[in-house]
Image (cartoon, rainbow, N blue to C red; front, side, top):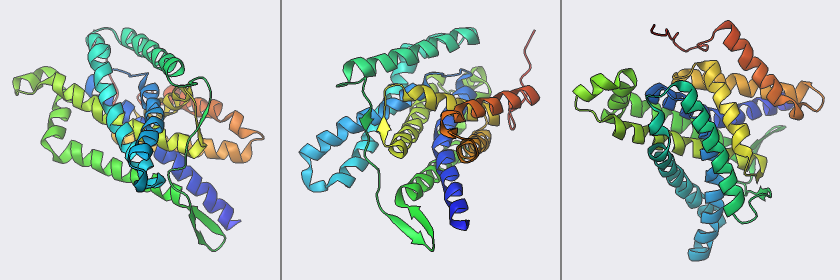
Length: 305
């Protein structure tokens, strides 16, 4: 029984780690741009497809590297590629809605997500069909009756490292100071010789690259990738960010822990819980919004009239 409980706790931490990487992107983009980037999940989900193409290329060109090394290199390539894709989409589409009503930006990013999914389905070879995705790591450690997969350790360790690196970047670097200045007041930031457009591009690169790692972990955990996974992953990441409080990095982590907790509990307790887990996640989101509209750690927002 103790080993079973430990296995469920491990699964909770793995899912929370994956969801955190997506939720951080939503909170970071909202905090800096004041825009809900609803296609963030779809942008991130391009990463596994890029990784699949990259691993084939790397394996062909550098066969002596071996499959694990080729996969790691392919993931790094996809991380950079999706970071640049985020910057490109901001320049092409999202920047045009920075000063527009929030609903216009929301509709635009929802439509952008649909375009991304259809482009994957159309231009990726057999893009409509699910694709098997290789495990990032195999093997496990055994502690008594408890089996600790290497993949789980990697997901948790990498996610913690990326969270720590992101917090260090925002609080202990000149780039982080500029990001926080633009998030606070972009007009005052301009008076301090800070170029908001450059900060927006940096923010999109960071959020998209971090989300890309979350998407790769998600599909590796599932063992398969589909062109429409971005909708599910985006909704989960957005819900986690909303529960914790959009714009709050700590809130994104807390929201992800709660969402992952509901995910695991429903699958344990409810018959065929895997089919209904999203319903319970969104019920939790609604309850939090009803009781605390700004999220658990979010700051109340007062509209100017």
